[in-house]
Image 1 (tube, rainbow, N blue to C red):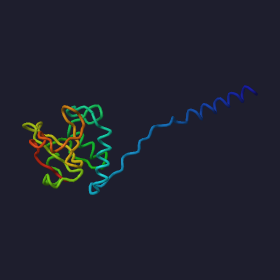
Image 2 (cartoon, rainbow, N blue to C red):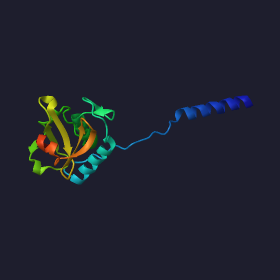
Image 3 (tube, one colour):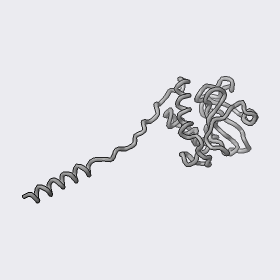
Image 4 (cartoon, rainbow, N blue to C red):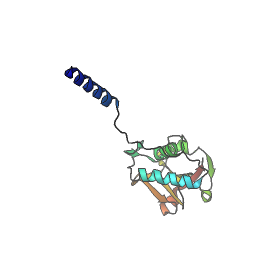
Length: 161
């Protein structure tokens, strides 16, 4: 009888332990923010930059192992604002409404002609204080100034979603 009780107790312990799950690390998704609230947009862009900063440039990439400029823009808008943009820079150039560089607001797209052809386009997201976040081919994901001589020279257009 003692042996039967021990066996039943052992089976009960196995069932209870086997049905429990290990604690999972849960990261709450970012708050979905309207692009009309510049303070919240800036906060979301800064958070995205802190998570992605230094991620290496990889043509066609879309994750923390490597990302290209349009992939970073795509992921940022999808992850932070639940907005699905086209995947390529060329397709993103026709999305939204074209605006003047002097009217930039946080969350606007900024485009550059850094070379020729479709692969000569670059895109970033305007943050604030004349700066934008983007995936640089040389330094990976970073924040840059629109006042930088290089970016001034190759600036092409800005668009608001």
